[in-house]
Length: 82
Image (tube, rainbow, N blue to C red; front, side, top):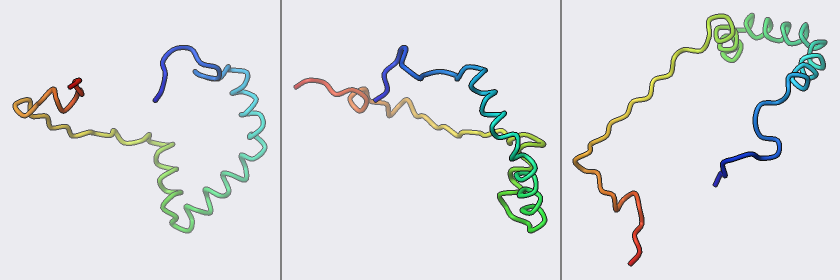
Protein backbone atom coordinates (compact mmCIF):
# COMPACT_ATOMS: atom_id res chain seq x y z
CA UNK A 1 0.00 0.00 0.00
CA UNK A 2 1.41 3.39 -0.93
CA UNK A 3 1.54 6.20 1.57
CA UNK A 4 0.99 9.79 0.54
CA UNK A 5 3.12 12.69 1.59
CA UNK A 6 6.79 13.50 1.44
CA UNK A 7 9.15 10.54 1.14
CA UNK A 8 12.89 10.28 0.73
CA UNK A 9 13.74 9.98 -2.96
CA UNK A 10 10.19 10.77 -4.12
CA UNK A 11 9.42 13.22 -6.89
CA UNK A 12 11.27 14.38 -9.94
CA UNK A 13 15.04 14.16 -9.87
CA UNK A 14 16.97 17.45 -9.82
CA UNK A 15 17.89 18.92 -13.21
CA UNK A 16 21.59 18.48 -12.44
CA UNK A 17 21.06 14.75 -11.87
CA UNK A 18 19.16 14.41 -15.17
CA UNK A 19 21.88 16.34 -16.99
CA UNK A 20 24.57 14.09 -15.48
CA UNK A 21 22.76 11.04 -16.86
CA UNK A 22 22.48 12.66 -20.30
CA UNK A 23 26.18 13.51 -20.23
CA UNK A 24 27.04 9.93 -19.25
CA UNK A 25 24.96 8.43 -22.06
CA UNK A 26 25.89 10.96 -24.78
CA UNK A 27 29.00 9.03 -25.95
CA UNK A 28 26.76 6.01 -26.66
CA UNK A 29 24.48 7.96 -29.02
CA UNK A 30 26.19 6.88 -32.28
CA UNK A 31 26.09 3.25 -31.15
CA UNK A 32 22.38 3.52 -30.23
CA UNK A 33 21.52 5.13 -33.57
CA UNK A 34 23.47 2.43 -35.39
CA UNK A 35 21.52 -0.26 -33.48
CA UNK A 36 18.24 1.45 -34.39
CA UNK A 37 19.30 1.67 -38.02
CA UNK A 38 20.23 -2.03 -37.98
CA UNK A 39 16.83 -2.87 -36.50
CA UNK A 40 15.02 -0.82 -39.12
CA UNK A 41 17.08 -2.36 -41.94
CA UNK A 42 16.11 -5.83 -40.69
CA UNK A 43 12.42 -4.97 -40.19
CA UNK A 44 12.62 -5.48 -36.44
CA UNK A 45 9.26 -4.60 -34.88
CA UNK A 46 10.84 -2.94 -31.82
CA UNK A 47 12.88 -0.61 -34.03
CA UNK A 48 9.89 0.44 -36.12
CA UNK A 49 7.88 1.09 -32.96
CA UNK A 50 10.68 3.14 -31.36
CA UNK A 51 11.15 5.17 -34.53
CA UNK A 52 7.49 6.06 -35.04
CA UNK A 53 6.86 6.79 -31.36
CA UNK A 54 9.82 9.20 -31.25
CA UNK A 55 9.10 10.89 -34.58
CA UNK A 56 5.29 11.07 -34.49
CA UNK A 57 4.52 10.51 -30.81
CA UNK A 58 2.67 7.65 -29.18
CA UNK A 59 -0.90 7.12 -30.34
CA UNK A 60 -3.63 8.31 -28.01
CA UNK A 61 -4.77 5.53 -25.70
CA UNK A 62 -8.48 5.09 -25.12
CA UNK A 63 -10.03 3.33 -22.18
CA UNK A 64 -13.47 1.86 -22.48
CA UNK A 65 -15.51 2.01 -19.31
CA UNK A 66 -18.98 0.72 -18.67
CA UNK A 67 -20.65 1.33 -15.34
CA UNK A 68 -24.19 0.32 -14.48
CA UNK A 69 -25.26 2.28 -11.42
CA UNK A 70 -28.41 0.19 -11.12
CA UNK A 71 -26.30 -2.76 -9.99
CA UNK A 72 -24.05 -0.74 -7.67
CA UNK A 73 -23.95 -2.01 -4.08
CA UNK A 74 -22.01 -0.22 -1.38
CA UNK A 75 -21.52 -3.57 0.39
CA UNK A 76 -19.31 -4.67 -2.51
CA UNK A 77 -17.05 -1.66 -1.97
CA UNK A 78 -16.90 -1.35 1.83
CA UNK A 79 -16.72 -4.06 4.46
CA UNK A 80 -18.99 -3.31 7.39
CA UNK A 81 -18.48 -4.66 10.89
CA UNK A 82 -20.74 -7.48 12.00
